[in-house]
Amino acid sequence: MAELPIVLGSSSKWRQRVFREHGYTFTTMTADIDEKAVNAGAGDRSKADPRALTLAVAGAKAAAILPKLTTPCLLITSDQVVAYQGTIREKPETAEECRRFLKCYETTPAVTCAAIVVTNTLTGQVYQDVSFASQLFHPIPDDVITRTIERGDIMSCCGGFMIDDVELKQYLSVREGTEDSIMGLPMDLVQRLLDEARRG
Image (cartoon, rainbow, N blue to C red; front, side, top):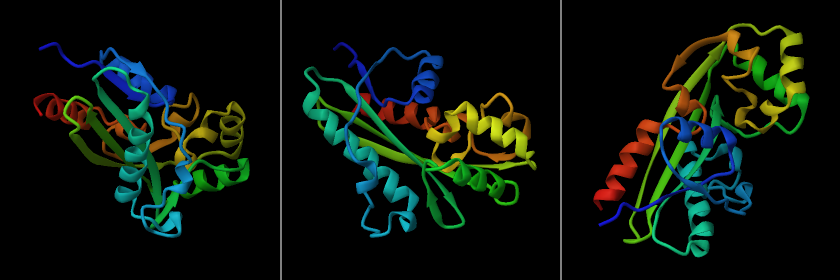
């Protein structure tokens, strides 16, 4: 039996790049959902359980994409949030909020939770799990933060931080977990779930 093609349900250029660097051939589709409407039963989304929230959003993305698929495939959807001292942090809404977020990570690490959901559309089986990682920063000069924000990419990163910015990466301190988990596509987890989906 021919191997099912892979569809990556993400518009994130970082996720697509990581996936491509690991040698996968895939197509992309995006889910047009209001992610912030998903609160995983928490009422206040900022107080939601990171695991439950990211799995709920990744599952909602899969549900939105499935009706658009015309041939059997392995559909990969994902979501990521950053937790800081028990509060969910999403993409910063202002430059000032981004600056405040970054300064916090000099003393307390940002903890990322990335959820992966793989759906085998031939069998209907769903395989899912999450990956946690954390990143601490050395003190970041204000002018470096200003230039990082001006470059713009950081404003589309949950938690208002990134590890591959040309200047910011010089201030990375202690990390737990993998780089690709922090970037939102933990490939060891993706590969395990894809293997399970192919066997299933």
